[in-house]
Length: 197
Image (cartoon, rainbow, N blue to C red; front, side, top):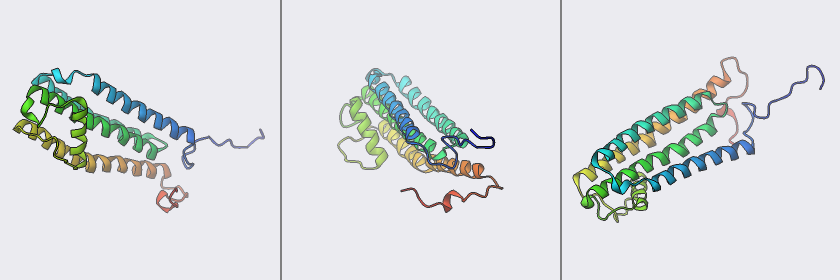
């Protein structure tokens, strides 16, 4: 190596992420989601008490807010904020959906008339996703006031997740990119760059 020669790091801030980095991120996302789904299916949700169900929902929502806060902090520190944001959304949304699915299964077990039918783990997940996506096929419906209240909480939380959480994560990506470019940076800004195809 000659004196003064510069060795560029394999993953510079301005460079595209390598295929290995993208594969590793995808593997982490798949592993995290698989672990969450596996935990959801092994938990004995159909043998829950009212106190345990309420505690699970409140602790889960608190955990979700903490997870998003940690992910925003991680995005702000990451040299790859876009990839980190995609990973954050890919893990936080399944966590959110599985939390409500678990609540529905536990609620249906506590009060069989809460929904049109007794919910299995798969039914609970299906119902949570239909509420989240606002599809509402009508094959599973909330019948009691308590069930309707929990579904209403999910619908309001869906709006927050789709609106506020996504905005916070995307905002963190923009702040990180602005910080990385700095005031004296002469590199073209991200919005001036041609889109990656």
